[in-house]
Length: 216
Image (cartoon, rainbow, N blue to C red; front, side, top):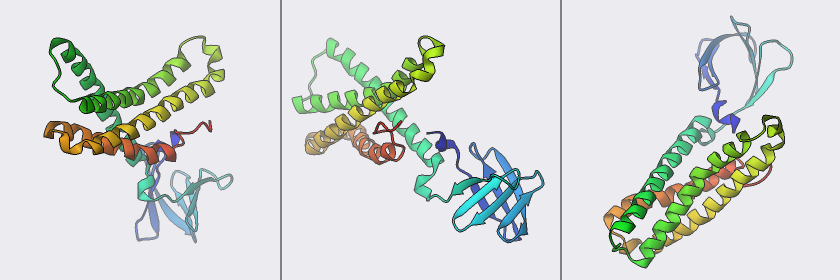
């Protein structure tokens, strides 16, 4: 997951030099001049060499760090934005579930049994997504600090387990949404359509970052 902030942008200036934006998030910029074919050096002593679609960077000419070319859909910044959208939306669903729970005690719900089941699974999915990172961090940081190195695998396994349950309940909730789409009012569609899209879109994103397995 640390690779989310490691995008490195390289721009050809067209005059025999290149400009790079270094992680995190392009905070450091370098201008490098070509000193040999496919070899560039900056005034700060940074060296960059290219070999096909691979780039090697180092402060010295030995032990360079390798970089691979990525497609636009593999951008860490893009994935951070998608994670943020999902987190915000799931958090809103969690707040709505609390509101509906309080409303349930004040007046009788007019929703059908099918609609109630959809909202229950939507709320369950959202709470699982929200609680997954919280549970991981709480389990890791609570307790004896000296035991933390031995708790990493268990903490990540617990978090991955909650994510896997969230994916399963999210897929089932999306199925219920599509099956009951015609019976829904416009207000429900506005909330549940993007919810289903986010649930299904989260699967390849979580799979890409190995958050659905247990290969720690």
